Length: 105
Image (cartoon, rainbow, N blue to C red):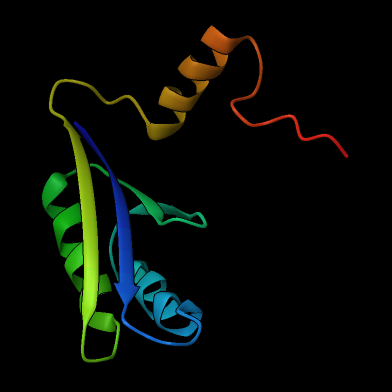
């Protein structure tokens, strides 16, 4: 079994969210999850969906402030051990190229 998730923790602030988001990302280190932070959120991957929920809750709680919004989208693959990277690889195989834009310089 593999659980993959998208986590976005957003503190209400007038300034940069980076310091508070960094606290959320740091909280993930306490859990057996693989993660990758992107500009829009963090991808999580764990062997057990319960771990994903625990890690997401810890990330949410790590953020200070009067108001925090958290979005969690979970893909709980109960009959497969396919990794998140395997999903990306499959899309890139279908595209015949990397799944990223080719920006003109």
